[in-house]
Image (cartoon, rainbow, N blue to C red; front, side):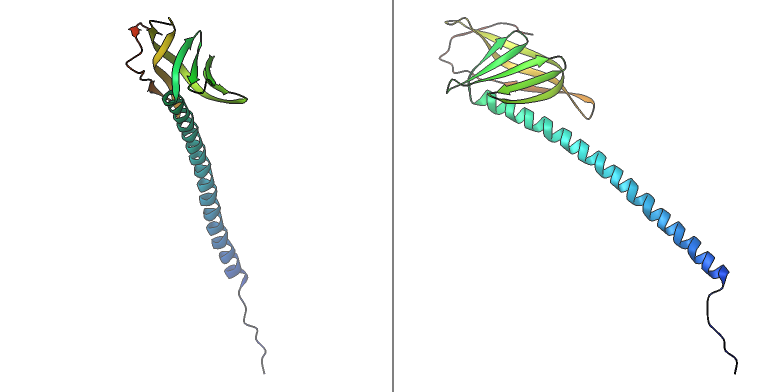
Length: 159
């Protein structure tokens, strides 16, 4: 009786290894590309969320403010409970300071449009135009403050 062992030839094993290597290489390339795109997407989402949070906070500060005062290179939000929130323009950053908390936004420029309170002679901000960046593209954000009609105001230009 003849003993025969059924097995693969060396050529068959080499071809299987080659095909397996090609498939594993394609899967690895796809996985690395997916991870890179996911990190770019996460960065974009974080940037957009940061801008949205800052703008939402600025809008809610304006809404809950008794008045918004113009200061050199800054503006101050005075709330009805006499608490103050300061916004300062430091280089290309707009920095929000409230008590011990700080937040900032990368900006190109800020323009303040003011009106003068006739009785107290304070420069009140009626509109803030912020030129900021989102995904390295410039965008314009406009926030306004409506004052009660019982306050006598005189229009003036601001920049």
